[in-house]
Amino acid sequence: MAKKLVQDGSCPVATTISLLNSQWKILIMRELLLHPSERYSELQHSVAGISQKMLTQSLHEMTADGIVQRQVFPEVPPHVEYRLTELGQSMDPILKAMHNWGNQYLASHPEKRRTNKQPENDFAQKRP
Amino acid sequence: MAKKLVQDGSCPVATTISLLNSQWKILIMRELLLHPSERYSELQHSVAGISQKMLTQSLHEMTADGIVQRQVFPEVPPHVEYRLTELGQSMDPILKAMHNWGNQYLASHPEKRRTNKQPENDFAQKRP
DNA sequence: CCGCATCCTTTGCGATACTG
DNA sequence: CAGTATCGCAAAGGATGCGG
Image 1 (cartoon, each protein chain N blue to C red):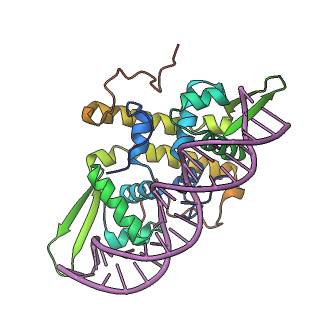
Image 2 (cartoon, protein in one colour):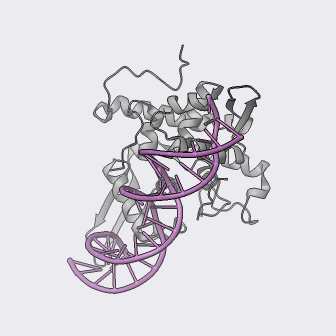
C-alpha cells in the first residue's frame, strides 16, 4: 500500500495524492493509459530512467491500491502483463489535466524544454 | 526552483510533475484556490501538519516557478501574503480533477476514510 | 510575524548481486 | 523474463533555536 499522508484522510485531494504519491506512479499510469497492457520489461524501457527497484515497488503499491492489475501467463520464459483496473482508468481525467497544462506551459515557456525534438511520445495521441 | 526530473523535459506530464513535485505544494495550491490570498501563518494552520521549513521551502520554489506570488506589507509587525499567479490559477483543472476523483473514491470506499466527520473543508465549496 | 540556520534522524533510491 | 535481497549513500524533512 501507498504510505499514508499526515493530512486528513477526509480531504479528497489528499486522498488522491496518497495514491499518486510519486512521479513514477504517475508516469507508469501515463504509460498504461497509452498502452492498455504492457509487460514488466516494456515498462522499464518506456518509463525512461526508472530503476527496477522503483518499478517493482511502484507496481506493488499500485496493485495493492487497486489501481493496477497483474496478469501472469504460465509460460516459459515467464510472461507478466500489467494493466490499469477500472479504478486506475478512472484517473484518466487527472492525467489529461496534467497533460493539457504541461502542454500549454511548454508552449508559452519554450525555454523550459530540455530537448528541441518534436513532441513525440505525446500523451494524447496513440503511437504506431 | 523545483528540482528537475530524470524524465524527458518534453513530456507535458513530466513537466507538470516537476512543478508539483510534493504533496505540500499541491495542498498549498488547494488552499490558495479556496482562499485567494493567505498569510504565512494562516497557511501554516490551514495546511494541516506542514512544518515551517516545508512551508517556507515550498513557497520559495513555487515563487521561483512563477506559480505563487509574494506580497509584503511594510508594516510592523510584518505582514506577508501569498496568492496564486495566473499560471498557478491555471492549474485549477488539475486540482479539480484530483478533487473529483478523490470524492468518488471516498464515496465508493468509505473504509478508506480516516475520520468519520462530515466532509467539511471541501475543496469545491468555499468556507464561511 | 515571518522567517533562516543548524543539527540529526529517517527515508528514498540507485547499484549490485542473486533466484525461479 | 521477472523479479528479490542487501548495502550504502544522499536527500528529505522534523525539531530547535536565533534574528529582522
